[in-house]
Length: 195
View (cartoon, rainbow, N blue to C red):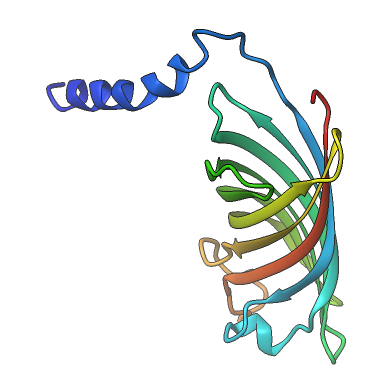
């Protein structure tokens, strides 16, 4: 119990400036909805990079500010199908939730750093082996306003598909469980719903 008290006061000390900046003004939610489109590939040097080629993907995300100028929450989902020179295909449909930090710079461009986790549906074809796996997410984004309601930018996302936590199927002794490392670069547009 003695260890919990100092940790509690330390967290309170850190959080108090975040919430105190809104004591003098009314807090207003500023939801953002966005879309992105761009190439996706396995990280070079990983096991999947020797199997799958670069493909295209598209995604949707929603972002909501919390009582802070620099911290936000984001949730998103994207779809892609990685193809190989053989018959192998990997269908991916991961969803995530992430904490977002907006760099506090007074500049036309905004810079965001993101990290979080989620769950995704993945399916190997033509075997049709698939299911839900946990994913870890990290990303960077930069954008600029193109009007009052819309921002345009580019995002760089990294996903780690955590497959090694589960055992291989019992009826297939030659299946190897491999964590997937995937990144994408997307051109994005997001819309300020409460500018």
